[in-house]
Length: 126
View 1: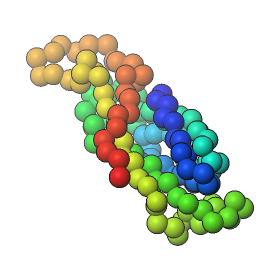
View 2: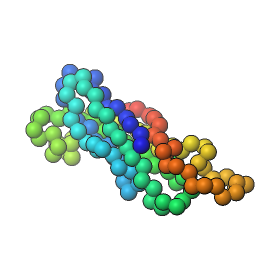
View 3: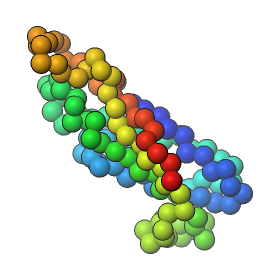
View 4: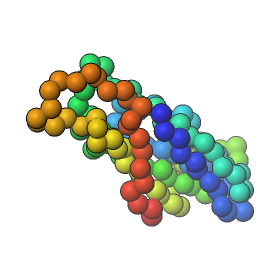
């Protein structure tokens, strides 16, 4: 599990929505929400391996996340507005894996690694 904080540093409402390139592999809770002025929301990202017995996590390195921030006009209609609004801010994140989990060609079959070593790292901010 990884936890990210989404902070609203403005004086108005901000809505957020998180997208991923592999929705079958990650559970994001909450995946969208509303932040009041100067508030912070904690978002938990859970890794769910597609094949439980696999010990090669190199495919995780391709996974990305996009955090979109929107300026809604209404506190009651923000959920429908974020479908049509252009994001005011974007932030990109990438899934990463500890080197000890990646397969090497000269390594003998080891015990299956624990998925807690899959984490999220910052890529860029727009």
